[in-house]
Length: 347
Image 1 (cartoon, rainbow, N blue to C red):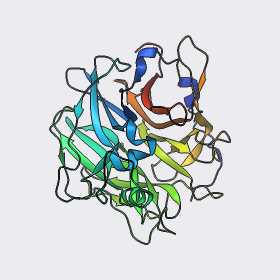
Image 2 (image 1 turned 90 degrees about the vertical axis):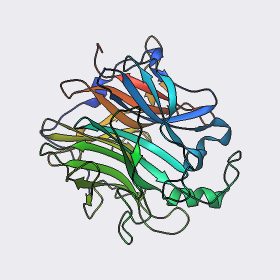
Image 3 (image 1 turned 90 degrees about the horizontal axis):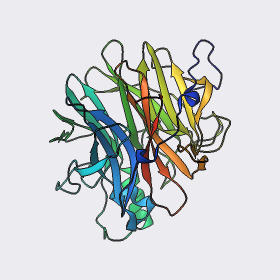
């Protein structure tokens, strides 16, 4: 269980790294909600943006029932990016835990192969041209599990597993669902995964929402979970989600959406920075507010938005953060999109 206190010797100030966002660093698709955003490079230096999308006509909340993972390509990390294709076709398997919906892409390059972690789910059939009813929506939400696919090139083809790489643990803190995967390589060569877990509880939404840790010796697993959640809010069951974890030097960092503004002492939904010396015990950073719900566009006044979520990073050749990727919903009812926020002056 995490106790709110500051770290003495660890003092990354993520907020001071943010640079103005150029207009070309916005990726949107007419007729589609775009969410998430995880980036990598191929051997030729082209950039691949993996993102979730679903029809705008189905409504924003249809991410639970309609989402698919697609990718776009650019010659520069800020774009412009051009949509290429979906990475696979949902609903293409007669059975399977992830047969209907895939979401939350997080890409890892390891030993010249590419590993794409994601949330997958399934549920009852319904008219995909219409929003799902409430019972169907919750059925899809509560079947969420974490999977991984592997490819030799970011354009695919991708091979995904027949079962989740990180399933639920009935009776434990993540007994209802697992989602929001993020991974990094540890200094000793293992793979650390941070993820969102939801406990079993009163239907339909279940219990507490927290973040936890699992380790594996290989990107395909098996992953061994720590027994308790790593980040919890002692004042509210809905603590954090959308973690992004990385290792810099021999030190670990994580960005997370602060549901209640408890850790950041800022507005609900702002993003907090956490730190760890071993990847197991995590504390809020001394400069805990990583960013709030404002976008600092180049040559414009800051824009306040309804949601600024799903933080992911692209690193430079030295292993330092160079670009922050986020999903944006400007206001309720608007079409969502992805932005890339530069963290250095010259990319």
